[in-house]
Length: 305
Image: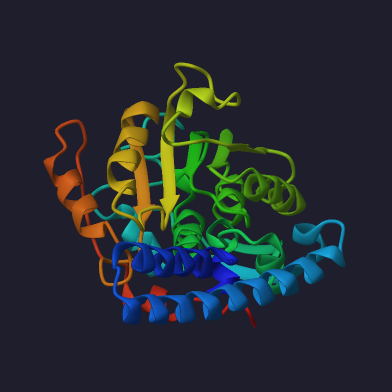
């Protein structure tokens, strides 16, 4: 709990204990609430003292506690089949060579090195680690892009929820995208994505912060700019994300463009059922929902090792 949320949980429990004492005048309940509050406040004090001590030992907690990860993404027949499922390859506008290469079987191998905060870094930051984790769907989406370069070549690409690692953006760059904009709500995450993408594929990737509720405030995207390809990996994991992601597709997906989103299923992510239902009701998109082949999932790399 402390790794994920600092001391927010203990503070909330203290508030609950205080509320129980205020709302119920019974002496017995007050005594129990006071005892609980005392224990939780003591836990909070010790936790905050430990976190403050650790933070005081470094001037830059995020950058001082990093780990480097080496990842190899290899093109596969399964990922290629996933890309062509529903005639994905060739339905996006631009590039001019999708028909020519629709039968192309890529032998590409993408080797990526990137730096992300380690677990100690999460504690020191005292903030949500979500933008700084390497979600499995990022590797799966990168494998699709490496396996079907005709999906990317010569096209403009927008990645939603890029996180900090730059795997998907690096795969898009390797496949020959004309313009790549990787976005995330976390400024720290996009700064790391910019550094990681530059380390692997040069400076072709533009990494920028974007709030899904206020996309017009993103200065690196033109007021009326559209993208031929919109990508997302594990971007639906809360119920609130459903309407926001669909609004992003309405705003940024070009006519005859293509969006490819790979997400964990409803058993491990909130909002996925509602997202699939909302997509099926959309009249502005042709929607195809399919399952990632099992052999792709079995090949997922354990990034921590």
